[in-house]
Image 1 (cartoon, rainbow, N blue to C red):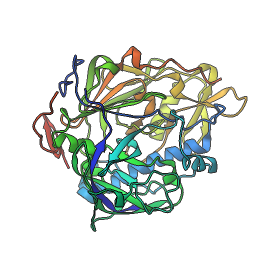
Image 2 (image 1 turned 120 degrees about the horizontal axis):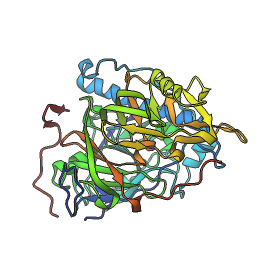
Image 3 (image 1 turned 30 degrees about the horizontal axis):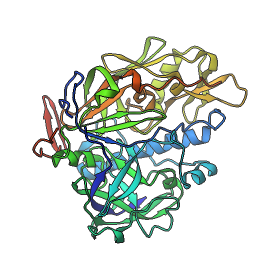
Image 4 (image 1 turned 120 degrees about the vertical axis):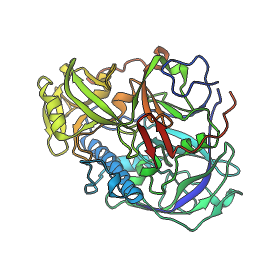
Length: 457
């Protein structure tokens, strides 16, 4: 996927509210920041009848792994071989084969609020809105632009109708989320209302393959600049650097119906008690913490590993060896798809799975662990704990199963991730089982130092 960078000022639809302390472990009584309108998370691995959808699940797994591969490629290009942690390798890009019905459906207008987690962003003068998937494992942001004849079903940003657009001729961004799929874009510069000046975004004006159709209009990447193909800060980093938000944080609640992105702190209406902050484990540029463990029915199965916290995957992905160890402690677990690391258990005996970072246990909802029966009438169900060797050594990826039971705060000032208990009014009912003014502008978070932690980008 080839993209050419777009330099714009980003405007995010928002509601302003009061002020949290930036790195507090206690719940603030007043707050300020930006609530971004978002929609629900998708059930990516089930058919409409609730049966496990193997082809779609494997496509999403490979899309997730390709996403991290691209981040490593960008890191290597930006920083050189020394930037990769010991044991981290860049593998071959994987095929992503979505069913025909999925790619067709995604190219049409979407009305299902449970289908994905995305937010509304506004660009240009006058502002134009697009629906962007929010992904903290991608460093770049991109939107389709006018003239893209292969972007059917997308809302296109119209350069000609933005009085503040200026075409540029510099840089190339390569994003290969799947073998044989790509996009080509043009660079431009723009301004907009809620002013994040000179925000770098790639504008897509041509695509190949069908994987891009699975995304909404575009993507708002919230990764660090070291994993960005353009090497630029994401919109939230720039918003803080320019004094538009009070704290170097963004907080996420994932839900099938009322997901939330809060920029500039924490929304106290969405969590209870204190926040358990864990420092980032590496300087590579991913939202990755250490000292993670995964438990089955109260017993630790695998522990002492790093975990990438991912807003945009439906799985708990671990290296093959670690996942086999996990399932060895799960009664009646068996291999369902050896090639893709999928396991099944009796539907009547879904284990209790908890994730831990050296403090509290975060117990996964059974509904997010159970991906559905292996076939119509089957008594076995596939679980979302998946074994994949994806180039990060012993590191796991914790996605929606974790983030649906925590209020998660990403702090790019202190370089930590915080986990809080969801407030009762923010927790949806369990589904039926299968069967103030901003401070003065702060320096861009390119050299943040906190104790022994230093992140340079």
